[in-house]
Length: 180
Image (cartoon, rainbow, N blue to C red; front, top):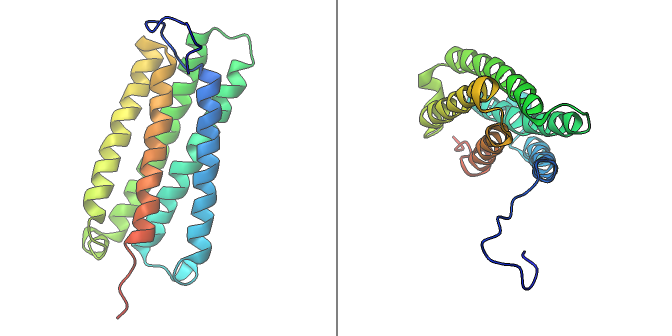
């Protein structure tokens, strides 16, 4: 909110520490919702279908990893590193984490099989779309390490991951297995 009398053309931007703090709060909330889904889901988690367990794992990783990245960014902001170096390191860690998690999730997805994943409507399309989005933001992280050296690409990865977590959360709630 701009103070009374301040010109309208003044650029109002959020500081990286503020954005990361808000991101950490949202990620903690998403992680808490994941626990609620697991506790109040239909049956024990080990009784869930493989597709539902994969979606739960995607939800967990898409909410816990942004929390860790926000905390890493906040930690590095407390040092006297140059901002460009801070965002290079954060983006490198982010790309490494997301590529590792993405490869692991792809292996699990392939092990489950397309036919069994189709038991829940839209699962294959959602997995493909979020995988491509994750890959694109990982490429942005690598570009940030080498060229951009800015905060916004790193934060874009965090926001993208949290949006994917929201999608997985809503799918776990709304797309329930049908009773036989």
